[in-house]
Each structure stands twice: as C-alpha cells, then as structure tokens.
Image 1 (cartoon, rainbow, N blue to C red):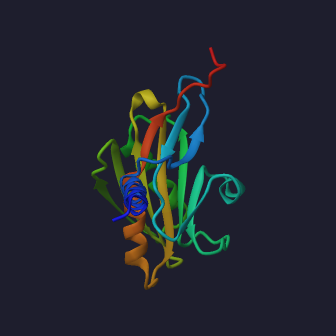
Image 2: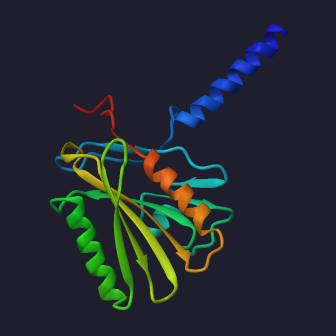
Length: 191
C-alpha cells in the first residue's frame, strides 16, 4: 500500500473511533457559574441522522438543547430535549415525585411508571408518562453529584402508535447513557 493510502486509512479509523467513543468535542450545552454551582458542560455524541441545536430552536422553547431528525416542525414529538437547572430538591427521587405530581395535575387520567437507569457516571432515573391525549413522554432525570450544583433531564414525546417508537427509544437511551457532565474550566480572565 502507498504511504498516502495508509495515512488516509489511519485518519479514517481515528475519526470513526473518535465518534464511536465520544472523545471529540461533543459539547451540546454549556452553563455559566451560578452562585455555588460551577460552570458546566453536557457533552454527548448525536446519533446518526439527528440534528443538534442549542441556540436557535432550543432557546425559542426555553431549554438548553434539542436533538431532532429532519426539519424542525415545532411539535414536541420525536425531539430529544435537554433541560439543566440548579439543584433545589434533595434527590432525583424528589425531582421525579414533583414532576409526576405536576403531570397528573395536568392529566389526571394519565399513567406513570418509573425505572432505574444504570448510567455509568451518575445517578439517573426514568419516568414514562402515558397521556390521555395519546402522546407518551419518556423523561430521565440525572444527578451529576452535589458538587455540580445542577441536575439535568432528557425527555422525548412520541405518539402512542408511532411505528418508529422502538428505534426512537433506542436512540434516546443511547443519548442518555452517553451524556457526560463536566465542570467547565473558568475563563482565563476570571479570578
């Protein structure tokens, strides 16, 4: 093989390995220092075919980031939503309990179930909401630890009979499991 071909193959392999392991700059959302909470980033590689947005559609709907397929429709179905907030409640279980209470107040006929998520880096727990409007939501709360000063969630809504539900949930859980909190470095001029 020629030296150029070997170099090209090596670069292609490194690029594929970087995407597969998420070691590139996959930062999806950033937050500034807020009181005792240090500046932070949430990083995750997007599944193939998903578009990342932190600054246009996400800001318009008041969230930190979204991942979506195809063109932005403005509808919540098939959109992965990342929300980050300062930690206030004592635990992820308390976050889920408060969210479940709000959900059932809005949809008393809705059904909820919860299950543990074995994230490799932090405590996470999921809720599935089956709405009387035939739109279901999956929501995963994660706690990157007391020192982070934050909690975050990933959520996604889908129509009850969506034939691509399984594939959507698979991509969603891959994103949840690959998400990483990192304390952001302070800007050089901060003292």
